[in-house]
Length: 196
Ligand SMILES: [Zn+2]
Image (cartoon, rainbow, N blue to C red):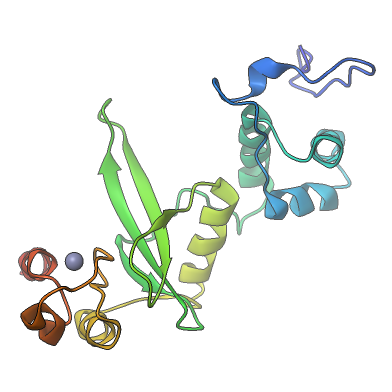
């Protein structure tokens, strides 16, 4: 075990990294520059330094290491919030008018509710998931400080008209009526229902 009974990381020189800490079916390590730099700065903690060393040597973190690093950071870094407490579902935009972010609550098979966070370029359809906890934390931080802001209905429609992409679902608006409306019919209906 790389951890001792006090949950402290134990270096095992000369041995290869334990593979049971990697997500089953993959041998890829998680790259997270923000977390790597944060760990580097925690010079008071041997544990943080050992994770940082591992990342330097191997080019990434194992899943278990990431979870441990997140736990530690939640405790000591008040700015770090990978769960987005107090951040609402909605469509957000960055301060450069470059990216659109969509935050929604998704119920998984086991009834567990998780936040889905996706982003796309403002003038490109289709989303990519934001998966890394520290990237989520960065986004939530930007929203809380007001650097990134939630788009209201008027802004959403205006961007939809300008880009020809529905801001809410990220799909191309493919008929003249929807383009004029700046939003797809389904999303318009869902919005008007939730606004009542
Ligand atoms: Zn839509």
